[in-house]
Image (cartoon, rainbow, N blue to C red; front, side, top):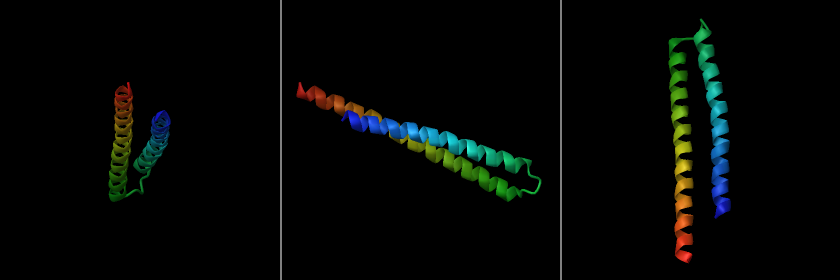
Length: 84
């Protein structure tokens, strides 16, 4: 049971690291578009929409994993309490 919680914690840490990398890349792309005089308004808007959608998705995934960790921890505690 502890291994499962450790696994979930590891996944959360990995996703957080990946989130930071993806967010930095998306920020760099957005900044590059802003400074490029040949960028169309539609491309800029599409990239901003993609960035927002991706950020929301990653935040939801992180939140879901945290919820799973908390629920799993509670379940383990409840099961251990029943054993005594």
